[in-house]
Amino acid sequence: MKFVETERIRALPPYLFLDIDRKKRAALEAGRDVIDFGMGDPDQPTHAFIIDAMNAALRKPANHRYPIGGGLAPFRRAIAEFVQRRYGVTVDPTREVLALIGSKEGIGHLPLAVVNPGQTVLIPSPGYPVYRAGTIFAGGVPHVFELAPERDWRPDFSTIPSEVAKQAVLIFLNYPNNPTGATADLKFLAEAVAFAREYGLLLAYDAAYNDLYLADERPPSVLQVPGARDVAIEFHSASKTFNMTGWRIGFALGNAEVLSALLRIKSNLDTGVFGAIQEATAAAYAGIDRPELHASRELYRARATRMVAGLRACGFEVAPPKATFYVWPRVPRGYDSLRLCTKLLDEADVVCVPGIGFGPNCDAYVRFSLSVPDERIDEALTRMRRLKW
Ligand SMILES: *Cc1c(COP(=O)(O)O)cnc(C)c1O
Image (cartoon, rainbow, N blue to C red; front, top):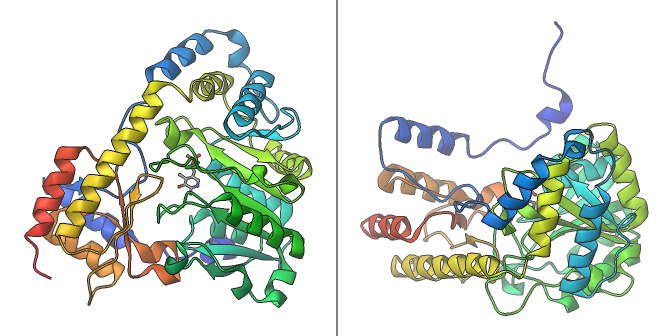
């Protein structure tokens, strides 16, 4: 056969964690006691009330058939009710809500619907790697803009050259932010909407962590900005909020024309989200104010406090996250992110993710995911305190 890797596969960034992954596997095979802060994947099980809803939904024959379209009517209605309750925003459940097989799926496919080959896409650094991959698959040209630590990891839109912004069709933003744990307020979101409007861009706002807030203030929706749905869509995910990463469901909200274009791409590739999962997720969002969800945020808040205090005691400079379950310390002087991760793995059997994987301006940071119980956090910190720098 004539198989060669396609240009679009070769255009993907190199997989920087290959070496770390290999070392981690070797350590596990050698029976070493590895403590893994790598993957952003909750260690807690899906809440029982959601599993109960799933059990009932599984028994309905209607759910055994193709779940054609952008989401079953009861799912879309439940989401619209959630958005109304949580953000005071009215969305039309049939046109302004779209079910996704995880928000990653929607984010990855979005450029196929809205970017022509050669068009520019504005991508934040640090940023979730799928923004770039989806852009490349659509033949788009990524232009990276920096989130500035001194601006609380928000961008200064005026630093994006206007010739670039004029060429661009799409901008990605993500708050609460993976990997930094930074949040955005409505004032910033209004600035982002104004920037998108000025240059005729689609703003794709990734709100996967909107319900994992650790501070008192709850993160806003971009759709709270007046007129935002003219230029924006917003991605949500059940994954991190409800410990449902394995279930694969999320949704997009906002601009009806864009969601309809995304559905046209999707309906040629997939045939929707399993109906029973949609039903269970409708129950999840209806139950978002339940004590289990509060307890879940408390758990991450306590872990974040523990981890930040412990890292500071090891000499790391680190700010407590305002949301998400990530801690994002600076690496010690004399290290880059890959060297630090390698040292932690080699000498302490502790796995974290090098910042450089999130963007070129992140080589002075590493990410710890708090998907590890207290005793293991303490054990990791004890090992790290013994290291020589
Ligand atoms: C985890 C994550 C997602 C995707 O989650 P799904 O499981 O695909 O819904 C999207 N964006 C960011 C920033 C994430 O960290």
